[in-house]
Length: 176
Image (cartoon, rainbow, N blue to C red; front, side, top):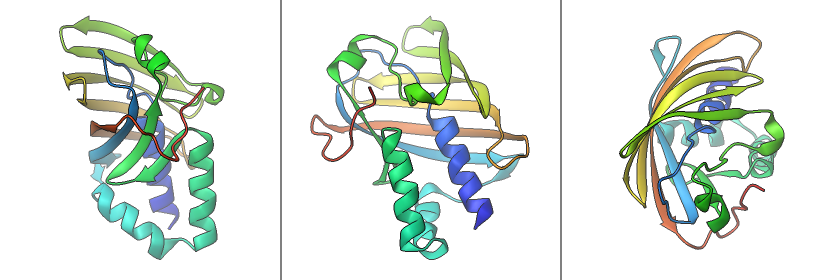
């Protein structure tokens, strides 16, 4: 169970800087990680990992995990993580998907057409990535970095697809 929780924590760290926007739609976004690797070893598909949470965690542990993520403005849902972006966040052209209280910083290092490169630094993770905007309702990212979710420094990489689900964020609260 610890390995799965560590992997989930790593996904949250690496997913957080899925940085920027290029005239994205405000509202509910679903971020689906894929091709996730830790120290060169592939992790199970996100759907498998989400399904295992019910098996590996007690209902109380799962509720605690979900409450912690909700405090960071992220929820588990659909095929991955969900986040709510406000119109004000979209207008900044630099959407803060990470929790402002987390100590994470991100910097867009290059903008060429629909591809933006960025780097990020968090207390327990750092790295770089690239976002490719397919439209105002979809973008892809690739992220590589190091993280320390369990007291051990590890290398991680992942790809993700972000899809706009609609203007109504439902119970997912935006980060402020």
